[in-house]
Image (cartoon, rainbow, N blue to C red; front, side, top):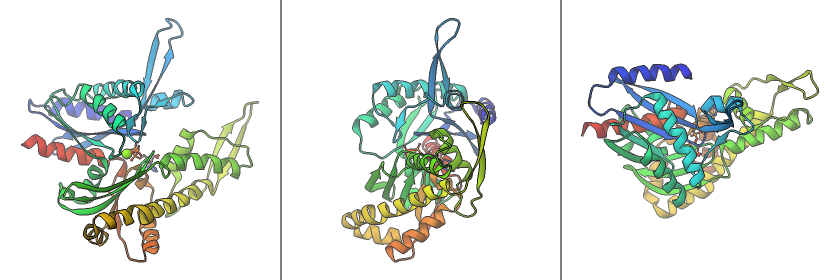
Length: 356
Ligand SMILES: Nc1ncnc2c1ncn2[C@@H]1O[C@H](COP(=O)(O)OP(=O)(O)OP(=O)(O)O)[C@@H](O)[C@H]1O
Ligand SMILES: [Mg+2]
């Protein structure tokens, strides 16, 4: 990851020619992703959205670690300061600003840039205001700053090479770390938004940790970071392979164990929960509010966005189970790289805005 950042840095330095460059940013509860123009191309940089502080052993001064380094060195105390992609209070807004300033500085994003933020579409006024304050005080986007819904940005790379998604009517289901969101888009307009924190990537991680304990007869306790890594590295609906890991035991020595079921059992339940929420809460509400949009959109592919859409085979699994639940054939698609798609889509909007 450090490598991607280095190349991104270099690209910014060499492609900056005086006019304002367009950037796409997604500040996520788990990862922050920035899409950076590189000639006719776009490169992506990402970092875990977290930091931690510690006292310098000699001077006693407070020092900060960010992103992957913080999560690796201090897994027990690292602070992921966003929930649903939003800072919940002033203290977390300050931490988010500290993290984001450090990150954009490390990337060398110029101040006089056009920046589009992919933001959560959640009804949480205080949280949105806090995010707004982070965006406003960031040292980038002097030329122009705009925000668009995260799942619209994420759907953009799924529906064409340009901004086709903005001219379409479709359903978007965002599979995030702290929330499940769903809505219909009609020419960019956001209809019948639905969100729940009960079905989320983080919940899957917690379930994996619990199941691992059961599967190993109580011998293995893993933390949230490890559970997330198991999921991100091994979850696969097409061909899951059992894997082994080793823990150091407190009294010395180590214990090797194999995980056969925990990861996919947790994910199986997750997809069932997603389908249940979409079929039995979101879609009835949409049909009630906009029956024509409902009928039209269901004849088109449902767009799955968000990081959980990265799991191999999850799109087909969702499609199969939703079709069965609704008793009609439903199609689903996802962008090629769901974890980066919102930033890439935001960058395409920024690029269009920069031309005007
Ligand atoms: N390659 C991958 N395989 C499996 N899961 C992944 C992968 N990449 C990311 N995820 C999971 O996707 C989730 C993060 O998705 P996303 O970045 O869309 O969330 P977010 O916007 O930060 O969260 P939210 O909007 O819900 O607050 C996490 O649970 C993460 O573990
Ligand atoms: Mg999100």
